[in-house]
Length: 114
Image (cartoon, rainbow, N blue to C red; front, side, top):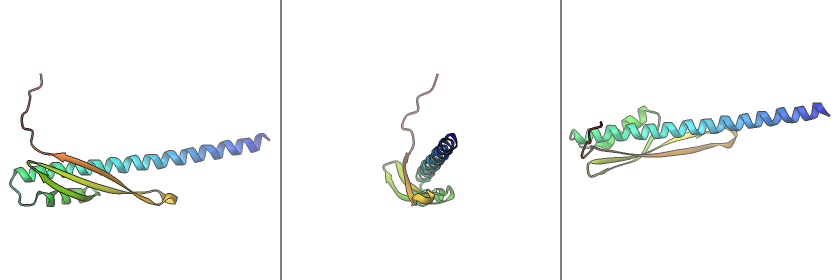
């Protein structure tokens, strides 16, 4: 009886550890998508300030260099808004997309700290 109970406990622990691993993968890919969006938006905003004709081209380059796909990019005044996605591979559960959006532009007024 104790052997059967022990086997169920071990099986339960293995299932929980597997689910924790999947959650870790999802969180990691979500962070990658957000980091890619942040960096792409910053690069595009910098290109826009330097007078680039197509700052979104720079956003796509930076997103690709960071392993994410640039789903969208638009210039909003002096700001740039970039949307990215990254693929989450979940083994038996298939593949899903993780999405992120970032906005970057110049600070209109910088307040000194201190």
